[in-house]
Image (cartoon, rainbow, N blue to C red; front, side, top):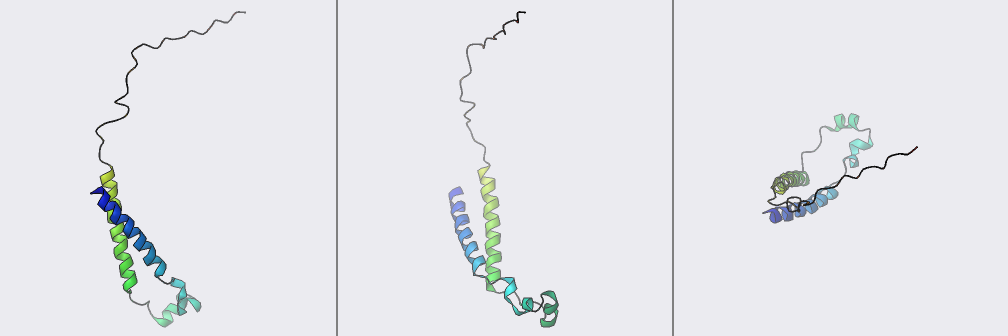
Length: 103
């Protein structure tokens, strides 16, 4: 299950990068050339969301779902631990006394 979600996640990552790079920038329209916000009042509101915006939105939602799923699946408790398998010291550790100062 983990491997399947990871494969989907990586595939969606590449699709998301491609979808974002294909879209034109916000500053490439006529309203930004004429002063930004003031010109948008003259030309009216922005165009409705095109198909690339919708595809990007769907890919972002899938990306978030797979990210959360991978996080939940990776937190499974492990049955064994390296520290539990270590041997305990059988001999007690001897304390070394510091030599006394002679003056």
